[in-house]
Length: 240
Image 1 (cartoon, one colour):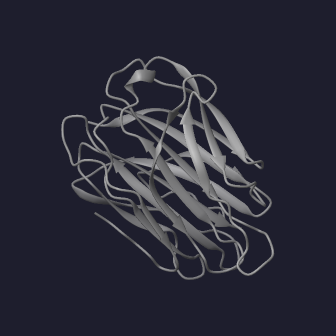
Image 2 (cartoon, one colour):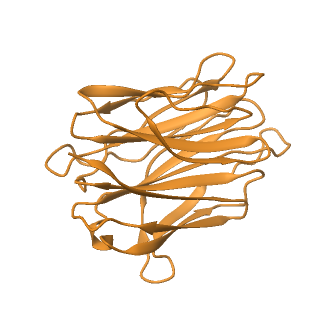
């Protein structure tokens, strides 16, 4: 059964950010890095950076992660964005402490934050990326992540002017607050067929949000990793 191993996190306002991650002394490790950011820049549309690369041990023998999925809210002036990147087999880093570096195409206008989450009894790929966008005045953040009882699920949310705790059953793993934007993410054990990963919007107004998530497959079985999926626009959701 795929289960939580460790988490490291960092926020940054330049083009890149580092976290120091200690992997457990276990076999069959996977790694997911969930990145949340957006834009407060003027313009129509405002400029929003994208993730250029994610690497483990960038100053030694770099190992690149691959994109799992991206969701970008294009409505409003804040344009929250979430990207998930993964390394299906991270067992080479067992019992090691390594730098994890996220590089953006340009510096964010507010804050960028990420959580690097290693999972044990995994290393067999990822499920299908699930995503949604909307605004808190309409609906709270929520996605349905296809999973199984032996899988482990990870999500991230980017939003503006909101204090949004995760729903019961989820464990918040990172949270960073900028001038206006919040970057946060959680984990939850998988269940038969699927799980719903949600957050409660607090605060006034109708801030926009973007949310993305994925299941991490158990080491003993499951489908191969899905191809990267990118989406842009309103009210989008994709599940396996």
